[in-house]
Length: 143
Image (cartoon, rainbow, N blue to C red):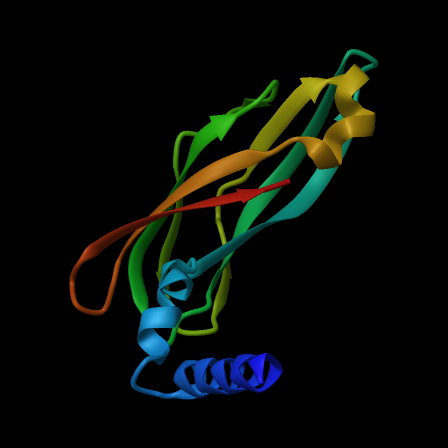
């Protein structure tokens, strides 16, 4: 008897989850996904024995379904890394379009950390204007 009640409760819960009426309530955590996906386009790497330096451009993809305008990326935080960039302008980006910044920047850190380079994280703050004219801000953290 208890086993049948438990199975019935599980079935009812599954029906509620699959119901399109209740779906937005359960999927609330999904709505804050980043629209702009960032990555690096490495140009050159060098090391003088003390400092490892990577020269790169910033690559951005609009993963949304609407165009975004006046896209700018600034470094929000770094750990044990020097980066010589104030702001990278990426212009307007159509849906699913990938753009590369026209300006390059350099990332430097102690050469003793070069083996740990994949563990170094840089957080970029991306600001853009959406199709409704709202200024949107999101953070992209990657290594």
